Length: 91
Image (cartoon, rainbow, N blue to C red; front, side, top):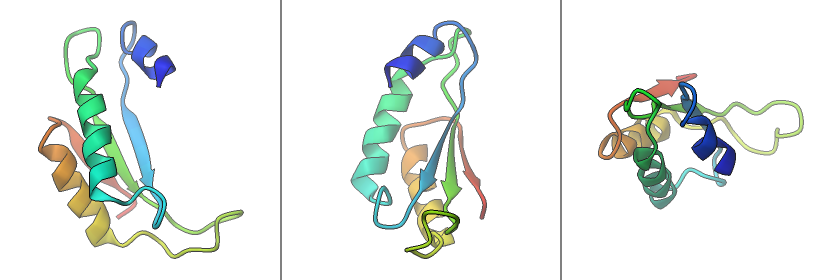
């Protein structure tokens, strides 16, 4: 987190979070992340875009299913309550 907070002071930053079922797919986790991202600003004063991506089981993480698209979209709506730029991915 400290690296990101430093980077936004000198360059354009966009963040991506991978939503893994049972790991970080909760509403409160997204609210907390959105509040933190909402406090960050790129050098030009713009807010930081957040990309919310769907997980697919691969390689060492084949013990769970792909993230339900409805969860990704729901979490994106929650993030949009705080953030100006929210995008979904892998849906």
